[in-house]
Structure formats: structure tokens, C-alpha cells
Image (cartoon, rainbow, N blue to C red):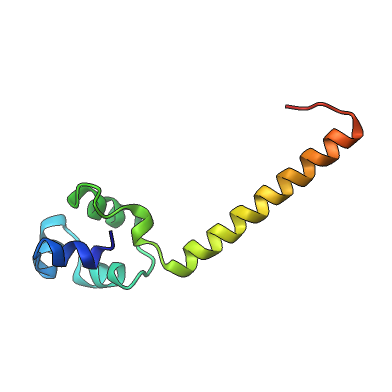
Length: 93
């Protein structure tokens, strides 16, 4: 669940949320916009929302797309490497 959705669902005031978890308003508004944030800020948000907002939800959607594409490329390289190893007759774990 996105942080904005969580705040609306639970009728939580943004500034009150900031004070409660010990972050600045700019840090919260950056998180709401998907901007980079400190790991400690992300941990505080995830903990305060009891996991309803996940780390993945705090990432910029463009970054998630890039991660997905890179993951697919890594899988393809591994498959190609496995095919090369099999065709050469070598067995490696």
C-alpha cells in the first residue's frame, strides 16, 4: 500500500505522522512523491504502519521498472552461461 493511501485510510494527519515517527515534513513529502530517502526514514515508516506500507511501496515506480528489466537481463545471462557450460560438457554447480 502506498503511504498516501495508508494516511488517508487511517485518517492520519501528515504532520502528526512526522512528529510521531521523528522525521521532518520535507522527508515525509519526499517519501510521498517517491523520492530518495534515508534508510532510517523508510524503516520508521514501515514500522509505524505495521508493514501495511512496504519498502517496495516507497520506491519510485521508474526505479522498480529498471530493477525488473535488470533482473530479466541477469536471468537471461545466467541461462546463456548455463547453456554454454552444458554444451561444453563441463558440469559446475
